[in-house]
Image (tube, rainbow, N blue to C red; front, side, top):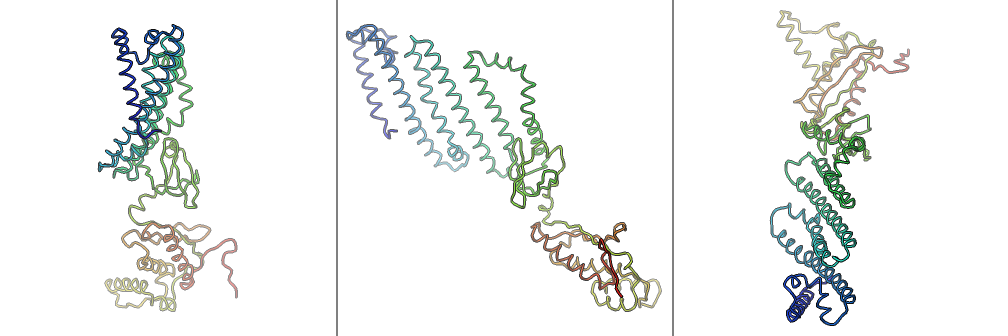
Length: 441
């Protein structure tokens, strides 16, 4: 490509002046003056050439000239127009024009200039060859449709990037809607291209496609379902980019990477990527852990089975041993106050008043409340579940501070390590299968 198109422009203008002067001396009519650049046959015949020679030279000159005009228009639009646009964009403070320039929207539109020049010029040069002229104009029309399609596609991608810069885009994706518009644009372009090739109007072509609507519905079934599901997910705020979701049916357990018209991509914690159909997010159930991240806490809910045979009333020795634990001491103090309020002056607890399981539960409540990694403002609960053949399930519910998986697993593991180690101190046993507890003499 030439950096400076000025010499070509000067040559064209000089040629125009020479031909204009020559046509004036030859008394060429006004209509011929307007199109002499494409039809110089009469001028050539006036110079002494035969009719056949003048026609051949006229066509060659016309083709060369319109190609030269197209070449110059391409250089001017891409070198001058794009340069001006780039400088204007650089001076503005907005981001959207920088994104459109980065997506090469203006560069792709610049390719229309030579096509438009050729489309309007080829009718003058090839007027005596209607078949070739018609094929050339059809090819140029298809080329312009493809160029416009590429420019619109780049614009839609830029529109998505512009949206991502807005505060409202936090966690909300419009990529699915962009893809819907892209499908519509591609469909219109295909219809126009087919109508040009077939030589029929787009309306007639659409009328003929009505019979194939059922087939198209079958082909685009997933796309239509994905569109409806995308609207529901966005409208009901069910899913955002970055959400941690769990969907066992598809083996998904991680953060949402991308939400498109047809698929939702999830990066699992093992660094694998799971692709889920968008409509499955509505038709099937999934767990969204966004609430835990918004609250800044994550709940754990686990239980340990206590052997029912180990549950018993505390004797004096066990009471004396456990009363040194602060949480149990506080519990016994509250119970002693109740005894005094009832009129019983004896504040000493005797055998048979409490079970070791009761004191163990009070002890666990104290452990949860004093744990630095747990959120004291949220639910802390130690409770018994329905006894089963595996013993008495003792369930512990609490919320860890933060949502980091590593911290979460570390806290609950340390907590249950402590619980399993301290159970024998209360005279309790953990029920385990298959052998259970074997007591040896």
